[in-house]
Length: 224
Image 1: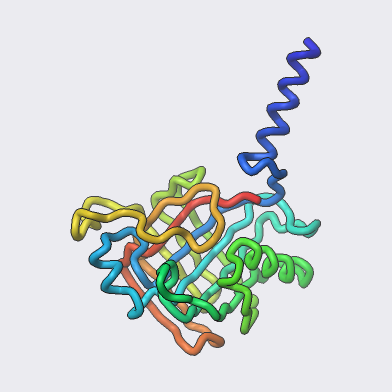
Image 2: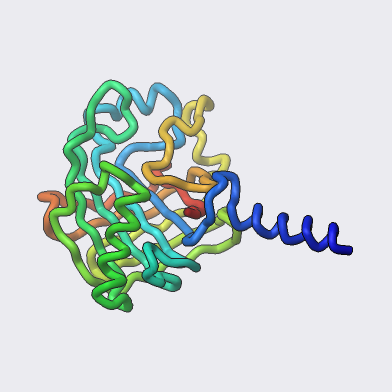
């Protein structure tokens, strides 16, 4: 009986540690769009390099956990990015990049700071240079579970919006599609999707955009 209890407890510990061997203290949903197709064939991807793909929106909804002791469950943060080159292109340097952070209006000052630091930890140098921090109501909706989403939606006040749907047969343009670029932030599970809406209308980046119907999104989960 004692041996059974020991292995049961060990199983719980390993589950908490996850595949990285570190305790996972924060987890949730992640949605990303950018201005270049991520699920595509080389012909389309090569045609977009240096012409587009330097803009992106990254959104995290924290379902449970904390960041450096600050509880963040139920809060969201969005990063809007303008880079110096096509993101993911191995032949061009996208840095320096500029980022506008949008933090959840439900968060207190300490939580807002923690949300920015959390996003910077997840996306690294891409969101290192924050030129503006906005506070807005953020709503994130997903259908499905465990990262297997049919549709998602993000609305960050009047500043940014994302709507995605699953890839279907009608989205095959050349027949050689694959995941050409990887997600811009750390994920535990990811799947490409079609961005029915990719929109930013705010200050700080010197550009705004509204894009429809590109195969330029990732949806999934994160855990740290």
